[in-house]
Length: 305
Image (cartoon, rainbow, N blue to C red; front, side):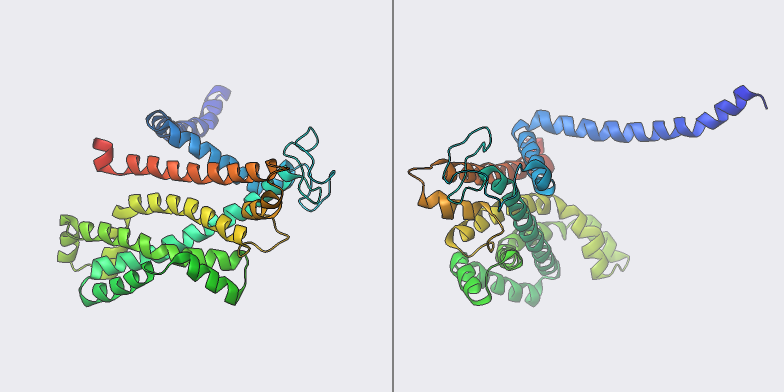
């Protein structure tokens, strides 16, 4: 074998790998580009959410100070050293907002994930099995939906105590009933399809019909509702922290920044309320816009129109 032939054989697997990887990368890039062109607001929202996740993960690298460290005079205006000013204890407001994004991401994603799992389990089984089981489950769901969520949350928090885990658990369980109704409606429409009848004809078990044939065909509304649930959970956590029932100090959160120095010194130091309020508003708006864009893209009826 000549050196030229050996070199060509050694390079063949590498070229094969490149040819296999390149179409996958180009396909994903093309889908992202089409989504950005069709839904520019949704794409911008996705970028903002990515920046939020990066701030939560790399908070020690992004924040110039520790969130408990006194960095200047109390209630100092935004400056080069403190770009968002300082609070009543002289702590850097920007650093506290960056570290507070961790609480926002934990509560938002955790509560949305819990609500989605519970809603899928309840709505999918209730809609697919039907009959007396469906009637019983839906009456329970309607009873839970009639409860005022804020009163329930405050009652649970006063009894159990505040904390990140408690907030995630309560918000996730309270958001699940509304989501389960939507999932049940999608399941009712899917279970009448011809492929479900064909699977029944070959003696497929109910578990297989639910997991292999029904669940994959209702993923679009599940993804959309999960995205919207994140924004709702973030807004609910901010409201609870503002009332003093959310994340336990000294862990910072955006709602705490509003209820503490922001509310107390709003007239003489308005930046203490403006920056946390903008952070909450932009984040919730981004998740809602991303969910709306995903709904337009994933729903065949809206996509065709």
